[in-house]
Length: 205
Image (cartoon, rainbow, N blue to C red; front, top):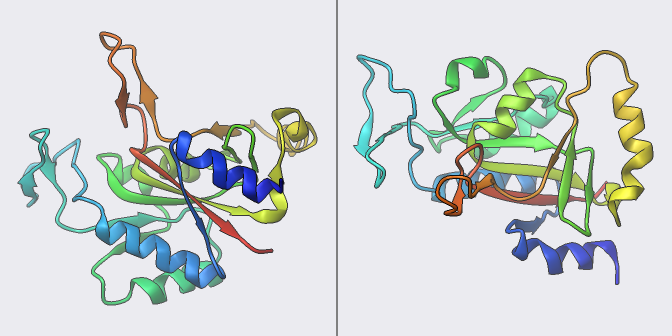
């Protein structure tokens, strides 16, 4: 069984949505589509004087504008997303994510690799913008090149050593599925410490 086939089989159990993009433009169209389909983002830190939408089922004000954060995108990558988002009303964020800690809809992150056995994304999070983009968004999209798929955790050792020795502090993250916890009265809950959903988008090299 190929690593892609293993990923197809195991992703639903994480749970993670899997999309195999035809190319980068198709991946960006997918990101726009899922952002438009999701419910309005909750504003966890409302700002006095700002206008918001109706309260969610949790009693929290919702945002009127949808946002996609793309820290770490090159100019060419950003232009591809910008073309797909044109006319949708979606606002794109490349930097300044500290000012959006109250919440935003979608964060797109480029993973260094993915361990198919556990459906774990390995992310170089040395940039604070990348850390915020992958943690604060309600919906997290991981872009993964097929050539970076790994079988098991031990296969990631060379990559992890490289990430830790590139210089400076290393904030490498290993992300498996959406944010989950059961430490509040032992009741399982999603999205308490991070995204409510994880979408893995496979890209050809």
